[in-house]
Image (tube, rainbow, N blue to C red; front, side, top):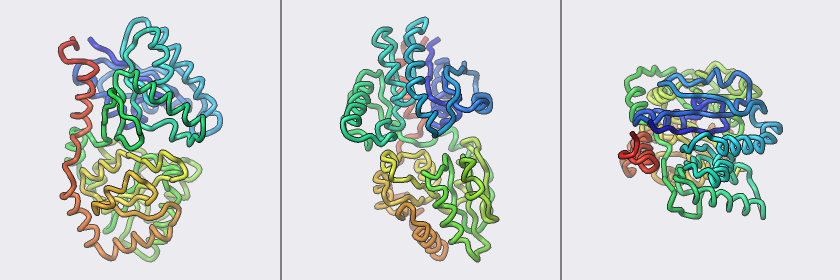
Length: 375
């Protein structure tokens, strides 16, 4: 049986929706899956342990926490750990590496061991760090080198990449057909007459405090509005974001459950702090989700990758960090429902949505594991 080893700086694959969608596709064609990750906070690996068809999970680095100085300092340790893990692998095997910080050391080790490397470049590392000058040029060159040497370079779109490589494989962030079918079958009760939805990873750099303040101003005196939140809100801002009677906070939940909530929503909120370079080139799963369910979305105007949706009339834009502008837009949509109805109709004029995630990812698997060689 063929095998794939997924390496990711995560405690478990379920902590990243991208991997949670990929693993069933590997298993469906008879490829066994191993996962080796980084448990930043003790207990997360157990909390997020895979619950689907069995896979082999283990942790190769522990500690550091999330989004702090210690976590950043441990990235070189992660890279060293990955290098030696790949170098000392007992047999030739294929590695699926999430992020350049994983793919680069794996590729270096593979120079000596000839392991095929899949570079899953979901978030361009040089943009996340906001590098400038010579250091930026060096890291970008190393990213391109890693991508060129990979068996496959998986990217959500070409918007973050100026160089086109033969190994590139565009895999847009759309839902899987199975998840769509399961979500469509679920009943989603609307908590109010006008429902605004926010989901996913919601720290302050994703507009959590902006959303909370704007909705407070918008909801003043209205009894038939609700802010529906499903996702991760950091402890330090959680009370500020969810502590209001009009907030319906669901917490973190399975993808199918979160998808079903689109059916109870009138508009989706998606914000990305433009001070972080990669945020100006956001390619979130939630846009693909919203398109599949015909739910218009609001995004901050600095996000360049949202321009095509804004121009098509299925999305609305306000500046980041301006709660008054967001509150005013929500009020306008609330008082003029025909604007949202028009946006919903505009979805029909868009080119056909790229095939479901699972169908497209199967094409990637076929490139790395040709069907005639799987058994």
